[in-house]
Amino acid sequence: MKIKEAIEIINGTTSSVSAKDSDNVLHISSKNTAIYGDWFLKMPMNAISWESIRKEWGGLSPNIRPEDLARVMDVIQRLLDTPVKDRFPEKKYTIQVIANYDSAYLNCRKEDNSMTFCDDIETDHVKTRFTQAEIDELKQRDDLAIDWDKAIIKEAKDDED
Image (cartoon, rainbow, N blue to C red):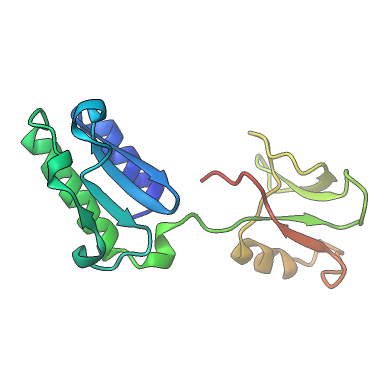
């Protein structure tokens, strides 16, 4: 399970609990935090057992629904069962084939998988961010005459999965 997915499940399926990622820690709190404190569970993103999770049961509001608390515990256990490296989105990269030229990024048209070059802005129609596995596949394509030793491959900023 990805961290983002865990937060979406907790925030989307519970009415009395909320989750947020702050400083590489997953904070679980009562929705009425102004009265009962900021959190009742703090899970470091690299936690591998319940012993690593800080518990502050005084931060639990009496208004937390039992089914919401059960959902949180289930989601946390699913995160703990997920290897740490698999909890985060896979890194994505842009591929610039001409240095210092903003319109020389590899673009893949989503409708037909054809390749072109333009800017590095990803849209509903054009893919400009590639995982390492996708880059490895692109390097095997006979129809791409790219000198991969000279291509500028950089980690994409503001990557959303």
